[in-house]
Amino acid sequence: MGATPVIHLSPPVGRARLTWNGKQTPPPLAAPSAVEIERCGAGDHLLLHGENLAALTWLLAHGYRQRINLIYIDPPFGAGIDRTRRVRLRGPGPARLIPAAEVEYRDTWDDDAYLQFMYERLIALRDLLAEDGCIYLHCDFRKAHHLRCLMDEVFGAERMLNEIIWFYPRGGDGERQFNRKHDTILLYARGDRWTFNYDAALIPYTRRQLARFRQEDERGRYYWNVNPRGERVKTYLRKPGIGAYDVWTIPIDAALIRDLGYPTAKPLALLERIIRASSQPGDLVLDCFAGAGTTAVAAQHLGRRWIACDVNPGAIQVASRRLHRAVLEHTPPSAGFSVWRIGDAAPAPQGEAHVRVTHCDDQVTITIEGYTGPALAAASPTLLDWRSIIDEVLIDPMYDGVIFRPAIADAPLRRTMLVRGAYTIPRVNIGASLALKIVDVAGGEAFTVMTIH
Image (cartoon, rainbow, N blue to C red; front, side):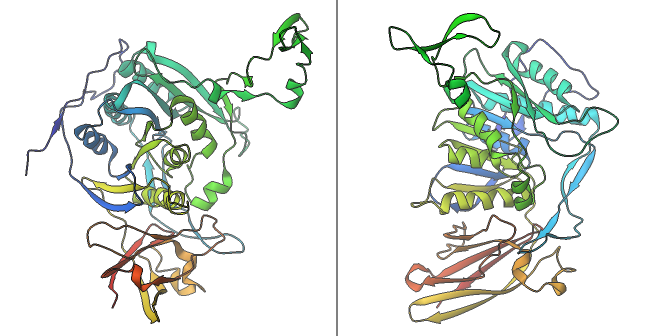
């Protein structure tokens, strides 16, 4: 085997400097090992399961330096809480929750540790970003001031393009201060030129606004004489909308959060606006705090290439479930993705599936008769239908013993729906081995390999 690549990160370029106890520029980093564990369809999108600094180092060691056109990150907010997974059973009727002690992700930080954590990753991200690329950093009131200073230091204050306010009018009503109903998204460029698709970011005129342009000049151009301030100024209809502002009103998608079971999932509309504005079809988009995978899903829909990374196996499961649907439900399937385990990322807890195989003529039927999950033992005896604890069933009918390639994905999005549980496949479409993967609502997995005679 060859020597492990050592990656040297570039120094910050800005003149501003933020200081904290224990601050240090990252030393040279050894690229971690990586193994491909799953491939869905044909394509070069990457879903990386691993600690994100290790994943960024692996990307730098494998030819991605200055190759990323757009970066969006939604890092921990420093909220001072550790989020536990909300386990919601599937099926019709009222929502049913069962206790779960598993921590979805930790967001309790010492200030110095948080700043060092973000500093190291921002430097690595800058090295990955193309010369004409942009980075969007999503945060809130807790760390926005510190993160802006870090961005000024790493990228240069002159590269700051926008401080975007995302306003989401919903939720509780505070009585001791103004209601906190917005997040901050910091937009920086890598160099002195960048992609900004002005027309893609336009706010379309309403019918009422368009009705004002009722007068026509000698060249066939429409205009109106009186502007909103009452001034008599000719205003021509030159474009199909108004230039987008840096305050965005986009509601939180509560239904999506409920169906995914991931409390911090961002609205698809938010990521689609960012991707449309700051990238072109075919560009490469990176999110190394992938969470529920919304960035990857939006990029997939919009014809961009993508790389997504998360250390939490539950996040990889949720993102995979959404992406399986996006790839396999298209006819023909859309561009696919592969899942890689980076470094020593911990696999999901292992459950056990109870499967029966029957043959009828030239058909083989795989029937799941039950499932036992490591975090669901207390709930299992009370279940009327084992499918209420299953999020996804995947089948690779021609498993090669190395990489799992699902060709069947039973992954209902709506929480009220259940997996089918029985799958009939023509015998001619089955190889020497068939692999079955089950993902449960608490983040456990069962992987079963069968020899079909």
